[in-house]
Image (cartoon, rainbow, N blue to C red; front, side):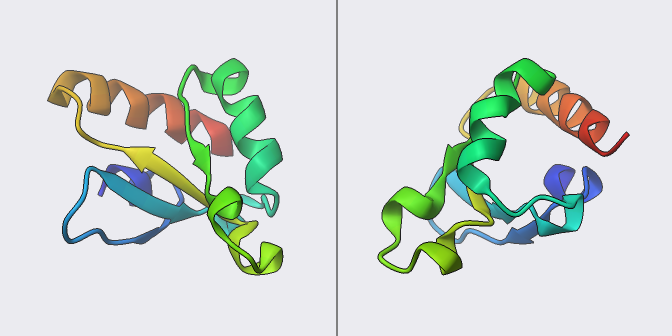
Length: 86
């Protein structure tokens, strides 16, 4: 729900420590560029899922976040990610 609050469209996960998010609602389309810039922009790391796709166009706007962290770490990450839309 934190990623949704930060403006991402989220593909809910049902059995992993990862969640896939669509960056297009943030006005972004290139997940690789987005993930490369993310640490500098807000101190959070994401994985560009395009590296898992044969069809680059399908995977390009998707990024993956790991949520197997302490609650405080995740809450801080959400606050940082919310700042991207400003």
